Length: 396
Image (tube, rainbow, N blue to C red; front, side):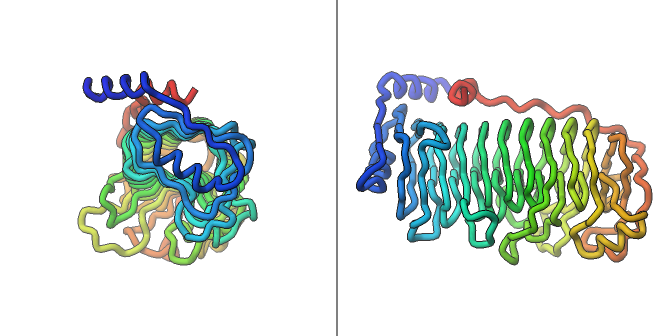
């Protein structure tokens, strides 16, 4: 941060005030007014209790903290929301969101767009009716940002991804739990991310690292997925038709698609009916000439594996499992790109390559064989992601 920005933040902090908002009559108007009237450095403190809201909320003031009494005490309920937008939309920088819950938003739970240096701490987002295609797409949805810290979140019921970070840079998702979503945690078209010490359980797919065409930022890379529990991802896919995650097979642990320089290590992964780890190319046709659909420079190492692959959830999966003796291996790669893709499996479990000859070729043309490591040495360890000190302080 430049010196002028540091001086500005220090001055704002010196003048900071606290705006208290308690549940009760006209809660919608009073809470939105507090978010509009807040000044840089202010705390909007939301009291314990339930706010029954009929419209989305928004914040566009820099340097504001929005703080509740705890994710089971301060509840922003959007069950009677009239529109289809977000529960809370943030479009400002240096924001801290902590210690409250968002329930039953008609659209995304909390979306932040272009909000650099944003902290989500001890936040719960939930669709209380369980998994449904009519639930909002994303629980926590930071996009197009630099410095994103998600710490201690709980998200349930998102019809796309519970915790999603897209088209962003310098990201940490840690100590969080994603359950009963289509994708538990998803890092999409993003650079430099650490996803660690999380629980992804009872989703369709646990942790996804994707890169898609036709987006302003692509070429996702430098992503570390480590020290997570990715177990029993057994919720049937309930994404609306046409959504990219509608193709994620039920029972997927970790899935890496079309990214480069991704390391998956030291995770506990098991009881995933399709597979524990799959590395694949983007399968659909595309016209974006700048897009690379292949997964490359991928390292999978030192993970602890439980049972996997007994009921693959993708077309042709059952036949493939039968051909392999009744189950898929805990780790597999589609094989697109061959040795040049430099996909390295170094776990103590069986692995296969499907040896699909090119991007977009259907699974029916797979020629599975035991995985054979390429001669290329795996890349050096990826760098640890570091957040600005003020963000780490705000997350304590």
